[in-house]
Structures are given as structure tokens and as C-alpha cells.
Amino acid sequence: MADAPVPILMYHAVAADPNEATRALSVTPEAFAEQMAVLADRGRTPVSTAELAARWRSGRPLPPRPVLITFDDGYEGVHRHALPVLAKHGFPATLFVSTGWLRGPYDTGGGLDTMLDWDQVRELAGAGVEIGGHSHTHPQLDQLDDGRLRSELILCKEIVSDQLGTVPASFAYPYGYSSRRVRQAVRETGYAQALAVGNDLARRSQGPYALRRVTVRRSTGAEEFGRLVEGRAIARTFARDRVLTKGYAVVRRARQARGHLLRSRA
Ligand SMILES: [Zn+2]
Image (cartoon, rainbow, N blue to C red):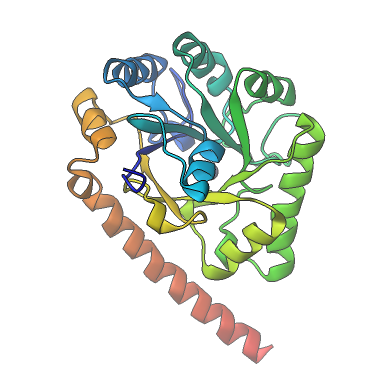
């Protein structure tokens, strides 16, 4: 059973009234509470990202019916709405913060909606939420040159370390985008594991720097949520996403080709 796949749920904002930029990937506070109740009813055992990776690394068995609850970016609703629900169930979770998006001294103004401040992040950490890195300004890391790539990773790690007093061990790629070069840089920065998207269950064989997650969004109904957690019908649920991702990859390749052309002219 050591190689049994594990669902890693990817959340973003938890908000009753999110703005347009975050709406599709948000969930309502009520839906989040219902989803956590489903996990409890089904005897699921949430574990943190560091815990999953450590167990897979050492070959120690996971608890029965494991699941991961993860949040990206750092929206305020994770503290306001998700934390009380997680605390009620005693569920650990992982929050991946873009340090330049959080309110406070490092705010670059890029946050898409109301973001957490550092007191709230510390409170989450104190309540058993693992705090991981998600870059500083949330760029597509695979599009950056080496210098900017390194500074995005290092700045994020140093700010989290300064603010929390512990070095972040886990990372999540913004937009889920990585490449061999990005994964290498993430490892060299000191992160022990990293999460992608991929809309699939995570498996040990994916390796610690490309673990896949499934997206929970505003349109995810109770039945679909149950299927996601069990790993059933994921291909069908996310078929549309795959088409979109493919289409976007074509656009990006075209842009890159144009960029090379311009650079070689200059
Ligand atoms: Zn993100």
C-alpha cells in the first residue's frame, strides 16, 4: 500500500463574495465546510505536504485513507473561513504563500483579492497549517531567466523563514508550471518537495518535485467532490482543462519563439 495514490486537493480563495479574478477557483465557506465534513465522514486522514513526502521518502506507511488539503496564494478567507473548520476537525493542511502578495512590508500589490497578513499566517502556522512557498510575485517560473528564477525562489524562502522562524520545506509552482530547470532550482533552493497541478492523484512514482493535485473550484458539487477524492472519473471532469492547458501551451511556445527571434535580432 506504500505506493497507493493520494488525493491532494488544491484550493485557492474561500470566500462568500470573491471578485472576478478569483471567483472560478474559489469555494464558498459553506461548500468548504461540507467538503471537510465529507472527508471526516469517509474516514479520511489529512496529512501535511511535508508529512506525505517524508513518508514516501522513508517508505514508512501513511495513515489510512490519506488526503492532503492545500491552499495556494494566501487569500484572507483561509484564515477567516477555513481555519475554524480545519480546527474543528483537527485537520492539518498546507498553505502555499506568494510572499509579495501578502499584506505587509513585502507587498508588491500583485494580490488578486484581499490577502492574508503575516499575523494571520503565523496564526495558521500555530494551528498546525504547514506554510510552504509559492514564489514571491507569482510568475510563470518556466518563463524566467536563471537570475530571476533564483531570486523568486530565494526571496520567498527567506521572507517565510524570517516571518515564521522556520524554513519552508514544501513548494507549489505558480499555475502549476515547471520544467526540469525549475524543478532543479527549487531543489537547490532547499525545498524538499513541490506540488504541480495535473489534475490527477499523487503517486510516489511522480517523484517529490512533481506531485500532482486535483482542483476544487466553485462549480465543484458534492458528488463531483466525492469522485475527486476517490480518484474516480478525474479524466472526464478535467477533460476541458486539458484542452485549455494544451491551447495555452501553444500560445506560450509561439511567444517564446517570437522572443528568441527578437533577441537574436537585437
Ligand atoms: Zn497561485
